[in-house]
Amino acid sequence: MKHIAFIIPYFGKFNNYFNLWLESCRNNPTVDWFILTDNSDEYNYPDNVHKISTTLAEIRKRFEDALDLKVALDKPYKICDLRPSFLYVFEDMVRNFAFVGWCDVDLIWGNMRQFLTDEVLDKYDMISRWGHCTLLKNTEKMRRLFMTELSLTPPYRCPDYKEAFSSTKSYVFDETPFLMYAMHEGLRILSIEDIHYDISINYKYYHPAWHSRDYFHSLGHDVFYYEDGNLLLLTSDGSKFIEKSLFYAHFQKRRMENRVSEPQNYCISNDKFINIPKPKTAGEIIDLSPRPLINFKPQKRFLQRIKRKLLPSNGVQFYHWPPEVTKLKDRIWNERYCS
Image (tube, rainbow, N blue to C red; front, side, top):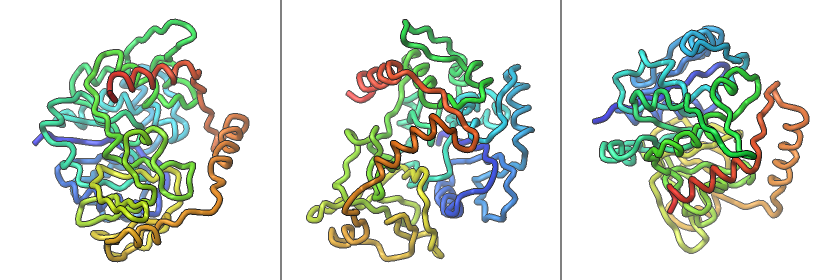
């Protein structure tokens, strides 16, 4: 079996369902996670999650020494830009793994090997294209992929890693430019749009994010059930009821209640983790996933985006990608990997 590892530099307090994330890792014993952190809270870490105590300053020095570059890593959020260089910077830590990548901790894993079989890993160079979860084949070419020089005809422009890593702005380098590099090199990339649930932040209820809507099958009312290491989507339109196994679900930026005392079987609905029996009917799904009469989330998100441009939150400023570049990226992706 091909060995898989994720590298997660994380500084500060973990979310209130980090213990459930750990348990979902425990139930994937053939995958390893390396967490480099200054967090000293007590958790029951499984054997395949390796906590390495360090500081942000120490991690910054490691990047600067490896890249021979002054890295603007003064705030933890900037680590997202550095992710594509993880295989290069932490080569000594993960050299024995066939695939290495990065992920977030605001998600719950399903049975990963159901989707990441050796046959799949043999077929692809890159798994996923998202910052919350990406895996790369651990080869010399992939370790240096982030160093790609990509010249685009104006008005297109794709900043290189030196610009992105040395700037205090967030370039979302792990998604936009890195995907452009990967597609430019003709890599075999596995799209995971139909096996992971990236929850949109534009709705109060669970709704697939915009990039999944054309590929992910939801009947409109969605809850999740974690059952002995398997993550299930239970979706219904009031009459039909479908159960689907997931690679993972991503709860980005959502405030969640954690009421779980028994972490092997629980339901995730209405922004709560709770120990209840598994729903078995369409009616139960509807009851667990009510819809508000009016959804103000899109307007709220629009105002938040305007505020972020004018008044950066937490001191984080964003590099604003020209629409022409994001449209080019999406067009190439759709033509090559979604047909």
